[in-house]
Amino acid sequence: MNQSKSQYEIFRQKVHIIIYGTSTKAGRLFDLILLGLILLSVVLVMMETVASFDLKYHSELVFLEWSITIFFTLEYFLRIISINKPWKYIFSFYGIIDLLAILPMYMSIFFVGTSIFSVVRSLRLLRLFKILNHPQFTNQSVQLKQAINASRGKIVVFIYFVLIITIIIGSIMYVVEGKESGFTSIPASIYWTIVTLTTVGYGDISPVTPLGQFIASFVMILGYGIIAVPTGIVTAEIAKNSQKPSTNSQNPCVGCGAEDYPIKANFCHNCGHEL
Image (cartoon, rainbow, N blue to C red):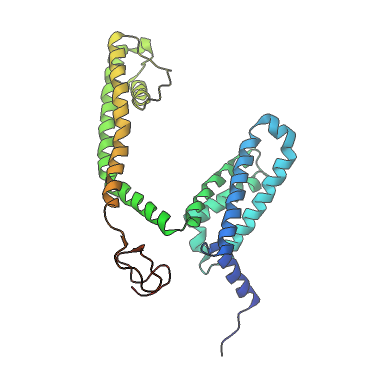
């Protein structure tokens, strides 16, 4: 004889469907509301740093911050009680971020100024990837991940090469310019090289001798090429992967006619019919 579920088990099941069911209408609505509150909380934290705005609307900001914190707290505990293995969520990446999102406001009761750390809630915007759980977005993210993994070795070698270049040029600039021009040490000269090579150009250190200015001009031109290299490496891998067929358009599903299922798939993602 089947034992009927308790009210608590039914409640856990419903909460699980709403919070974790990103493919359900209620789950997507919940995630959209959650994202809206995350955006609002980040905006509130930023506006608190505007002195004139905070002075005028301080009470309203505090009220909204606490309202959002209470909502996030309830959501955090509901996530824990609605799954069979709570520790798996608590120590996961999203679980740690969710906990860090609610701690600052409670800590502000005992420590002044800790509420500003509520800006960590912006990391929860990563949940957007779970909402966009569509085959098209999933396929694009997989291609990007594969391209980055395939380019990893080349990028590491390139960064090593750039590191050597910056050390050499920084050492040369220290000898050419000297302490009188602001190049007080080799580390300071390497800092100037990195700033110039990345085309940032703070201007706090600048060469004054003709030879130093010539080297600086060379570094500036070299910087444009260096910036383009990693982009070219990853782009080439993306183009290579995009040429590989990842979906089957030759043999549509007999159940629903879908053609965009992976080649190695055994069942149609649209209707579940065996392929």
